Picture 1 (cartoon, helix red, strand yellow):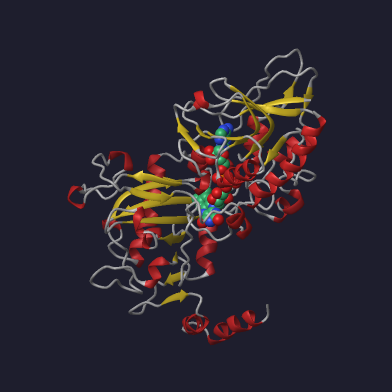
Picture 2 (tube, protein in one colour):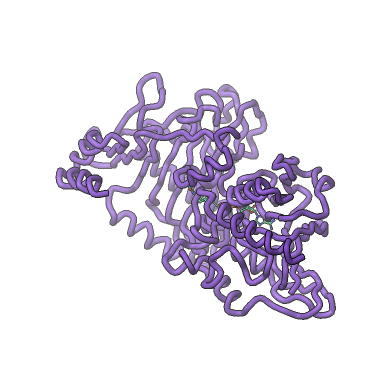
Length: 482
Ligand SMILES: Cc1cc2nc3c(=O)[nH]c(=O)nc-3n(C[C@H](O)[C@H](O)[C@H](O)COP(=O)(O)OP(=O)(O)OC[C@H]3O[C@@H](n4cnc5c(N)ncnc54)[C@H](O)[C@@H]3O)c2cc1C
């Protein structure tokens, strides 16, 4: 078998070069070599981890990314330019694009993923990430849940690593639960041969690793049928990119049951991410700011809103299941600039809102157009305002990412934040498909190295590291055979 991949790369692709340096983008395609030992499609964190291990082991490796920035769903991106306080426009909900008076620094967002908790320690050590500048900023306390209730001031729940203090916090609501916390703690060949870029450039390699999701990789980027009179075979694209196959001496195809499984992967996702630039810290009724407006301990926490009871979560979910964005969505609010002030201009902050539940498809086939997106964001902002009056007036810009937006911008099918649901039937030896959970695929030389492979989503780098190890093992065998 012989197979080629269309990497869907435009002129604006970013390229990581042989010594791991970024060759920048746009004008760097001319520096791209014709052949590598390994090509990685996608510069999400798993693709970068895999490439670093391959490069470390001596393989000439290139990483090809279709976006103008690296990092995939773990990207840090400036999407609201810095704007001096005096120039703040009167409208609070100005789209980023209309803020035309930039001053440095702007507002830098963890545009999709926003918490680092799962990164494998051996990757941190083996790739010397600290030496390369990665600084992990631990949070303590880490969880803050203010309540909306008919008493003044309303209560809140603040949890951190100090167990005694956390127990005191829980005891406000239940002595029994506070003691339970203590008890719990006591117990302890059709060989892939390269990629074809959107402009037709072919980059040859002995192996190809795909950091793209399984659906993108196998339904869009890989020929479904190849061979047959050296013609290029067009298949129906699932996410918009037409793809073509490279010639092969005999007609072959991906196994039907494999293709069916990949098509049927559950990629439903209820998350809408909203990134907000604000000119001051939110002040919560349950824990008001002091006069100097400096961060308080709870400002570095994950702040949970609309979580007073499971009935609220159930109602929010039911609405979305019927095709309507939740009217009182569950909100996880984080303010990364409290820990890292360099993310926003002085005095300003970036706020990350991870909200649920929003359907991929709206009831009645209504599109997720500007009106629908803004209406949902307004609902979210109204909710925050109820807990932290003044929040809406502090907003400078916002970036609303519904499930279709996450799909379009980050290549996440269905908007699924993990390249596919992390349900029991899609984990371990079935991720992404039974018999293909070892990073290999039906196409020899083509590997998955992203979240769609074991052990799944989250910024942990495990899929990238594991895939690189499998590739290195196979690569040595391949080299020996050729
Ligand atoms: C809104 C949101 C919030 C999240 N929050 C958290 C969190 O707080 N903590 C956490 O641990 N995880 C979180 N996650 C999950 C986590 O971000 C992902 O699981 C992880 O970043 C995926 O990494 P990856 O390298 O496997 O894939 P990705 O980051 O998806 O990278 C794939 C890369 O491939 C590129 N690509 C795709 N197709 C092509 C092509 N044809 N040619 C070239 N390049 C291509 C894409 O542009 C992308 O850069 C969140 C995800 C989202 C979306």
